[in-house]
Image (cartoon, rainbow over all chains, first blue to last red; front, side):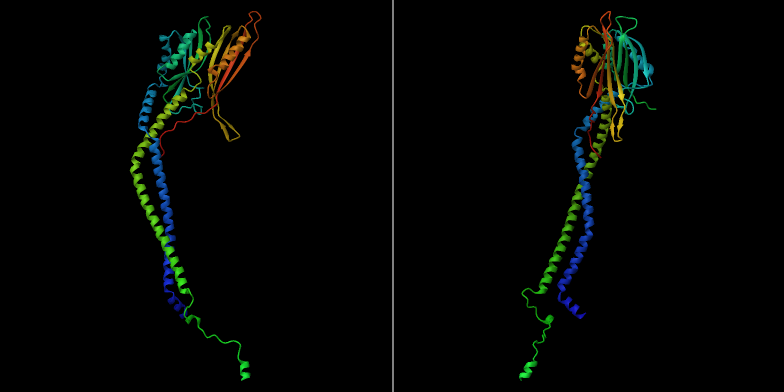
Length: 190
Length: 223
């Protein structure tokens, strides 16, 4: 025992050194978790900052673009058909008779659509809906073409989704056209 | 005397107590032990200080970054709100584009087809319709999405069959049948020629099928 104490006395510096080294190593190990935590936090903040910078880049002139698009949307919504206003809608098609030399014999508002605008269709509408009309028109070729043109040029948002043109039954000069028109309308609330 | 010399042992005891003898090595053991331990202590202290310094610099960086994020966040929130408004408005425009998606406007189609009609050919029926081909799942993994197909049916009469051949060739070569994103199939059928008039009734069936998918519009930021 005495010899061990003697040895220790002889190497005082070494013993103090070992104690200091052990304390340092202990502290070093204890702080390794803190470094990981800080590194993670720094990475998260950098990532957040990168996203913010990316957003700055991506949203260049976005206020102007939003204003422009909002203008278009207002314009679109001003021209939508209301599906519950059947008489107004049907009368819209009969009103072509006043402007063109056509006879509109029949206008039917249809419930079903075959134009792919419905649910799971390739052109599915989510914000708006579509109303289909089956219209029978009698006129000569030129006026039928003009009627089709007027459908596209109308203020309301509509297009011709199909047609069939045959010889009219009681006239040699006239043609009979069955036209399927699809009109962009307000989304049905129910 | 000679006998005493004979009992003299060949070895002699070593009475040296090594621990009490002075260390006379060129480099003393104590020095080596102290040197090694001091080196180790210095390494340990240096590592600890370095880690502490690194932690402090990380904290400073974090504080600075946090301040920058805090400063940028209100404007970023505004940008995200604008982005959301843009996305919603763009959806409306996209819907309008989808609504109008079709290979032709009906009036343009009629004008074009009537311009292609040669002398000696009469149309008796002209129709255009669109139809949805439902989505299909193949082998549980591959899904073919629903697609639109557009059918054009031209029925009529022709005085000579060569005119029908020319009309069909003209249709196939026209821009009407060469639309990007559509596959086109033109099929003809003829009925029996009238013995009295020499007129042959015919039917041309044209099918246009959508083959490509549209890219989506993206603009704005992420939250």
